[in-house]
Image 1 (cartoon, rainbow, N blue to C red):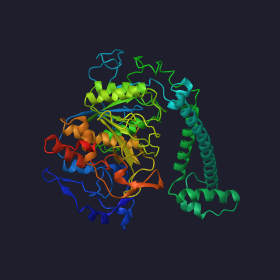
Image 2: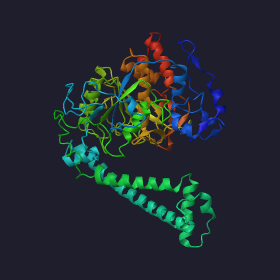
Image 3: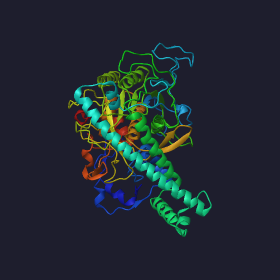
Image 4: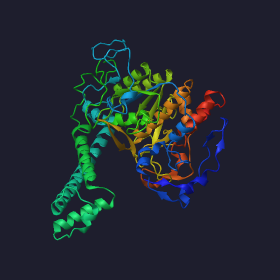
Length: 547
């Protein structure tokens, strides 16, 4: 990680003043910093854990100016409570940093086996679980092949992709198993040589390699240390990679696997209701995605624990609908409708897939959310693809591949890395000047995971909740604003730069940052709140063509 230090500050001489008292909106592009002899410094441990909240001017870190917004704009202001639904893998409902911000359905009596509020869902105290006790699932194209869903063209594409993925996954699994074996053996040899369970880089370098086996072990371990890693963490990561590829082969791309059987419904019949249960807690320790997402949005601020969420005044509604595999269109459609009908004003959707046989169900749910003034924040995806290329299909979306958005309440978010300059777009992030709306911090994000723990994770899945948090701040303090206005405010108030950015970790794929999304901007909470106040009071009319 890098931090831009003080020489960057003179670049911000062109800030413009808007009609909101003395607050300043960062609206002019900063200069191309890659042409300047800037000094860089590693982020401190504290900065690594909160870089997404930092301010480009005050902290010289490309965050969303969240801390600055609280200090200068929100100090002493309360705002109203906003319900944000996390449509995800479920979450740890007992987490120390999340339990105080859980939404509670006060019209439902816990654990009595009845639908007390007559909303169609039994015992839905903190949300709903559309997955029942299922966890592992196929990817959609594997399900299509198992059930013969779709036309001939779609099935041919699915078969081709499955064959490609299976071959690559087998190869990757074998490679990681070989690397794991080499590092494990080197670790065992070094422990025996040194007579201790843990050792340092310096101790390895001092070892006299008096055998071929010891020489090889020292070489492997020196390589690990030279890359800034420690052996314990590398072994954990390698084991995790082997597990990932093993599960992908056994479940995700296994055409014969049926993870839905335990749920008991027909997932391709939208009228087959009454399945699932009222417990949207994660089912296994590794089912941490939803917990991490929830923490980014609303982990309790300033309680001396873990992390601060972007938004205060939030209640998190947990909706478990995303398995270890591809989500079902039915669950997503019903999950969105559940959130809307139970008071959510913002729904975070950190998921996506390349095939969607019942996409229309989800499109209808998105339109339903729009009709009820609910904002949908969707992750752009982690394939490093240009989503303007129609061959790079990504569901759900707000355009149906028809060239025009059919609804105005969906904001699609790409991911930034904490490296201001040419590498500021995370290498994994999808992009697109038409089909990705904004970028926000998404790489190396520290947040909550099950069992009162915290961890760094990366993905557009982390960028979306950052934006959901900013949207919640806006709705909390300016509740008269509509969902489409909040979307436009976030898009129009962001910060841009003239610099060219590398896409998909490929130096040959580069373009100006302003051309990698529809807005050409990175989200800025401070600016968004300034603009929201002006729009709320009728001082500024939003540019409808900028959406």
